[in-house]
Length: 118
Ligand code: 5GP
Image (tube, rainbow, N blue to C red; front, side):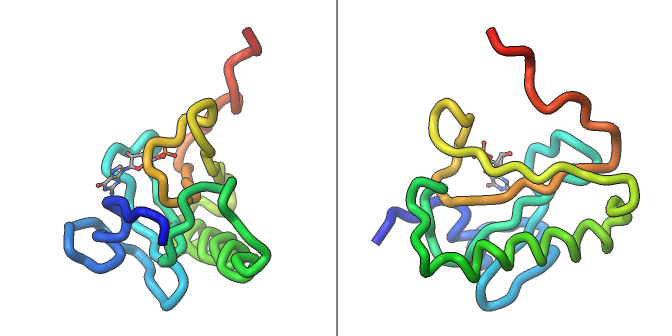
């Protein structure tokens, strides 16, 4: 079994978070350190540490992350102007929490995706 992180405790509601959506496969909650007016994390309830660990059996839940992202973007009023979905992986990707998650960010122009290559 992969190691649990703080996100498993959020899923089980053992630590507080502003949960906006939850079903049997996915949980979505506001990022504690928002980098945009809307900054939501959408995560599989099952622990998948990173995209390096996804398997064909995860196809359904990973697709579901996008369905929930689109639903939340509409509910949060950011769908029309647009938003960014980000999944960081590993050290170079800047991943801090090893429970795969999709960032849904919007509510202002987010600027270029990356700094120029250096
Ligand atoms: P990563 O860098 O791994 O892609 O993003 C991890 C995100 O999780 C960060 O944006 C960070 O602010 C958020 N985060 C870390 N710990 C907590 C927590 O305990 N609660 C909430 N709501 N967000 C957290």
